[in-house]
Length: 226
Image 1 (cartoon, one colour):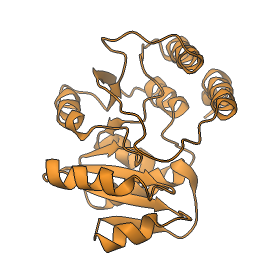
Image 2: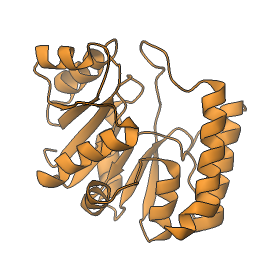
Image 3: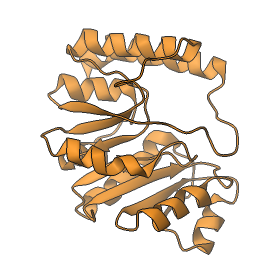
């Protein structure tokens, strides 16, 4: 499993990062990982240094896209075959990484840990947004993705190089749609996501609605010009 790198972007996750890192180290010692501190204003970097966690410490906040790209460059330069996008807030479970790898070895470029392969989506405002994004991806690619907003994804070596070397490739559903339109083979496995262990999510209802609108516009209109 040392050909897999778990990339953990972290912005102001002082209350969660120890839980996330220790779970990987103790329960999945065969997995390599790197925490990308995205210019946090709290003690995230200090905690990582104190525990000697594997750390990329960005001097300024670049946002998720920049932090993830830094992790992908790290993976590319060190020759990892697979990279896993993994949240620093405790919502993702590392136990799904092996099944994702097994699915990837069937010939896929991207594997998503999905909440809705065998489970139905609940009826909520956020899930309406997820359904609309999934419909937009199907409309533009002809492929069905059940959980396009899942933040836990595995990428193969080809995808690592793309994210590492091209600008404006954020780890978001519109980029997923773009890659699928250009031939990336994508699959999902059923997974369970936990609630954030501590702290407050930045996804307020207003931010979530704005995110959904921007993503839909990007998938339906902007991506065809990229």
